[in-house]
Amino acid sequence: MKILVLLIWMGVMTMWVPAQPSRQSARDCNTSIFCPGEELVYEVTWLKIPLGQVRLRADSSGVSANQILYHASAFIDSYSGLPFVDLHAIDHTQMDAVFYSR
Image 1 (cartoon, rainbow, N blue to C red):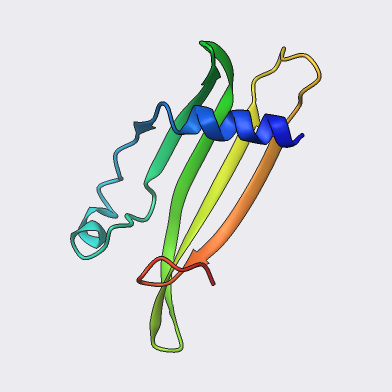
Image 2: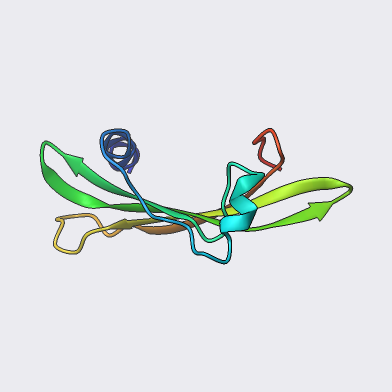
């Protein structure tokens, strides 16, 4: 399992295709590096063999204790047909204005 995670991470570092934010959230993008609704899609490959996809989505932002918190989600999926591997994971995080996870 550790090898699979390492292979996915190496694939993420090699290729990415960013998506454009929606019009509704475009005004929030003027003041922040995170745009609510923005989704980044990483195609994971190893030696040109497609392994899966990692999608990072910037969710809403909110205020807690007078501090802006950004909510983000990561969806990790392996492609069907890979032998011995069926990976589907979801991870959520909250970050402050200097991008430390809370």
